[in-house]
Amino acid sequence: MSFKELKINLVEWLLLKVKYPSEYMMGTPGLNRFEQYKDKKKIILTLIPSHDNLGDHAIALASKTFAETEFPDFEIIEIAINDIYKHAKALRRIRHPEDMVFIIGGGNMGDLYRNEEWTRRFIMKKFKHYKIVQLPATAHFSETRKGQKELKRAKKIYNAHPQLLLMARDETTYQFMEKNFPNKTIIKQPDMVLYLKKEQQDERTGVLVCLRDDKESFLKKEERQLLQTVIRAEYREVSTFTTTIGKRVSRFSREKELNKLWDKLRNAEVVITDRLHGMIFCAITGTPCVVIRSFDHKVLEGFNWLKDNPNIKMVENPETSEVINAINELMKNDSNQEIPSREHYFSDLKRKILGDAE
Image 1 (spheres, one colour):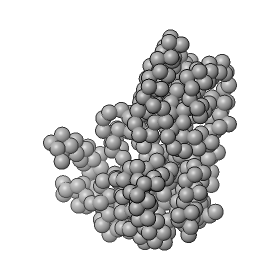
Image 2 (tube, rainbow, N blue to C red):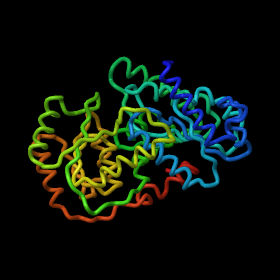
Image 3 (tube, rainbow, N blue to C red):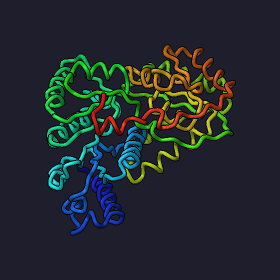
């Protein structure tokens, strides 16, 4: 661990100690942290990120909001992805018979993000006597030798857990789960961020662009640069944003950082993005959005939950002219359609979790 990382961890621990003094008695993180939860029903919400991707932090926030709203008689304990290794034993020691483990969802099931996948398997092994709920996820195990090796290990561990509920946030993942985890309860649910709803704004101006430049991008570098050049030439006010902000975000700072981004989106006339959460953030803020597909099915099938929203347009083959046409159509669109409520997507989810209903 570098000095910088040590300093960040120390600052976060001091913040925890001030905010939750009863969890940090005796001054040692984790020593007596969970004793106050003994004999209480708990939801352990884990795989909580600490990186810079606001999409994942929005999933964590929405998952916590869902747990607090739908399970008010349960205590909610958030455990960061790397902290579950050191806290698993202490959490099992104070187990209540009705305790559950919620693993936050996202696009990290598979061999693309191995730390998240390996941690998920650790949780399934260490919490074998708990009901485990994998919140809506996208799975992608590559056809490479490495990918298939990871899938073989995942099948062994997932299938061995006696009380595992899996949620797929797209049809491809649903079919994948049914094939590879045939004895598990599997349901389809949209991304948890749709559980959130933000205020809309009437006055909007300018175009916002958010395009990936990583391994999930469908656009080649030259195509991305050309598209950005043409957009800047066509429209007067054009700026960019990103959902990966280049600095570490904790569970204490995530809402502040998310609100800053959501405020920016609320002020935009149109957003162009190939990020799933760029699209979903537009949906919850009522922002017109042109969506470009990603390298896999994640964005295309994520759009299926939102296809009836007239303010969101998908461009599957992102020729520059098609993107410009979609922008112009949305600028002319004066639809004030109400954003679907959380009940539209999640009304039956609590019952499914408690009863493992089909």
